[in-house]
Image 1 (cartoon, one colour):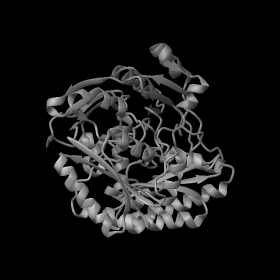
Image 2 (cartoon, rainbow, N blue to C red):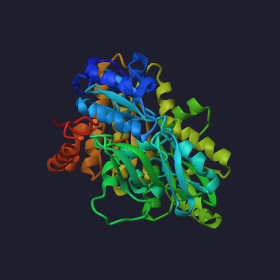
Image 3 (cartoon, helix red, strand yellow):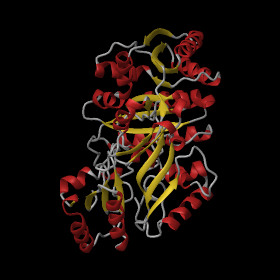
Image 4 (cartoon, rainbow, N blue to C red):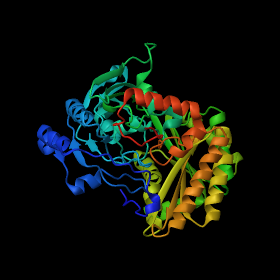
Length: 475
C-alpha cells in the first residue's frame, strides 16, 4: 500500500461528523480489545491504494462475527455515526476513506470458509476470506474460484465493488457469481438475500442490489459464491505485435468468433518494458497479448490453433507457450506485478489509476486514443487490459510534489472516461465508483437513474451512516 498524496487540491469533499465520546465508550465496553483509537491503526484503516489523502476514522472495531458487526452498527446508528467496512485495503478509488469520519469495522478476522457444497458447485464464506485462501480451501474438491482482480482481495470487498479481473471473459464478474448474502443493514438488523439455487424469481433481486453497492447499503457478513471444476487442461501463451492496433484487432476477432478463451490480457510496449525491468524478464518489448485456455486437451489445442491463426493474420510473432504450472505462474506473475512495476519504474512517483470498459467492437477506438494521449502528455504511464471483455486500465505515474502533473493525470482520466461513455461503455469496468468516479455517474446513467439510486440509499439508510460520501452525493 503506497503512501497517499498530501497536496490540498487532492482532497475530496470532507464533511466530518462528530463521533460522541459516549459512542466510543460504548464500543470500548462492548468490544474491549477488539476496539482501538490508536493513531497508527486509525491511519492504517484510513487509506487504500488510491492517491486520496483524508483524515483517518475516529476508531476501529475488529469484528469477529456477524453479531459483532450487528452490535457495532446498532451502536453507531444510535448516534448517527458513520461506519465503513474494511477488508484488505486494496481498493483503488477511495472506497474506504472516512470522508465523514466515523468507525471503521475491520472484517479481516472473519476469515472462515463456512461450508463447501462441492456437489452443488457453491461455497459460503465470511467476508474476510481472501481469494487465494478460498482457492486453497477448495482445491482438494477439484473446484476453484475464478475471479482474479490481481490483488489478494477479500471476498467481501470483491462482492462490494462487483470486482472481476483476468478471468471475467469466461467466468464473469462477482455479479454473476454471488448467489446469496448475509447482510447487516443500517439499523443493525441481519438479513439474508438469495439462496444456493442457481436461479430464482422470488421478488426483488436484493443480492444484485447489494453486490457493487460499495458498503453504502449494508455490510456483508456471509457470501455464497459459485465454484467451477478445475479444467482438465490449461495452456497459457504470449504473442507480440509491432503495433498496438494489431494486438487489439486480434483480440476483437478472437471474441467475435466465439473462441472460449479464459483470459486475454494486453500490455503495450511501454508496460512490457517496465515489467521486464521489474521482474528481470526478457519478453519482447512490443504490444503483447497474454492468454490462457481452459478445457479438454483436444479443446485447448483447437483453441490454441485458432488463436494462433488469427494472430498470424494480424502480424503476431514471438509466440511462447506455457503448459506447466510453473511456466504459467511466471507469465501471470509478470502481469499481476504490472502495477508495482509501474510504481517502481519512476522513483518517488505515485500512481493515479483508472479503468473503463467498452463494447468489444469499440475497443480499438477507446484504447489507442487513450494510450496516444498519455504518450503525448509527457506523463509516465503503464497500461494493462482485460481486453477480452473490453476493459482496460491506465496508471499515470506522477511526481507528488508537482500539482500540475496530478492535474494532467486527472485530465487524461476525464478524457478516457468520456471517450468510453461516447462509445457506449462505462466509467469503470471493475474498480467501482468510490470517490474518483463520482463525477461521471450522472453522465453515464442519467439524472433519473442517479435519483433512483439516491432514493434507494435514503430508504435503506435514512441517517446516511453506511460509508457516506461514496458513489454519488446525497444529503
